[in-house]
Image (cartoon, rainbow, N blue to C red; front, side):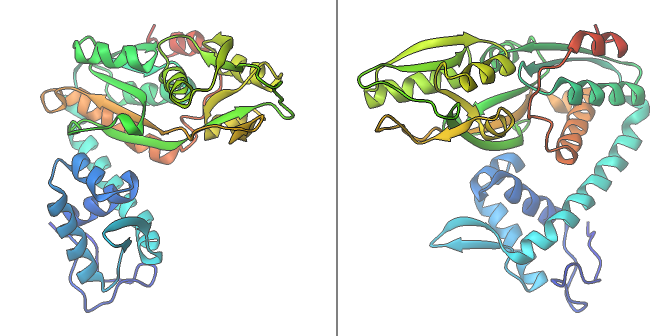
Length: 331
């Protein structure tokens, strides 16, 4: 099935060129969103060779290179690729709208949604409210917890879908068809302005409670490097964690968006001791048996569309969730 016309888009298409296929557009967008051909292949449930073939075919049609490659390594989209990307996303969004419209009358059932406790609940609950307005016969249950616990509940089939954060280094092996990346950003060491450390003093840490993937990763990094440390503060609120670090209680580890939001400064060393770089963080949506549950499939598509429109959805502020839940009649 072909979709793109012969008109010029951002100067990269010529009237004499053939049409792009939807498979090529999906492959192109997936590579852009996942940052590599390998991850895009997992997202598309295809081999890397198949994805590469789709991209090369699209480049032949357009007469332009869409990605920079250096000795086989992916280095991001070219200028032509950057111009094409927003149009490609819009094309796929229109198709999703058509699919939702056709599916709408038949969506029924119960969806059990697990969300990491540091997500922007305003964004999520507005999304669920829109979904319920479109599909009033779907019941939605929301459970908030640490990502590690949510993944266990998902594996035990206590949840249908979970929005969780994981460290990129832990993504090994085959990724499920229902694994969709929503956001990726660096995890940074951070502290308040002017933070100092006395010589030979253990590094004071400001961390979440046990069960947080950040906490485990930070402790592992410090132990591997032989850096002595102590827990100076632990809690489960982002605002409290940022306030404790800003007040000078210790060093924390937060996603880049959280560091900027909290008025903190990123660190590469403390008192002459270099801190090992931390892994990138991925916010992902994971689910089971989406093909057997049309209601869940529809919900996941709505999450993907909304997350692309609102890139601040995962820059968390602590919100009053119960009031919103009651308003949406989800509690």
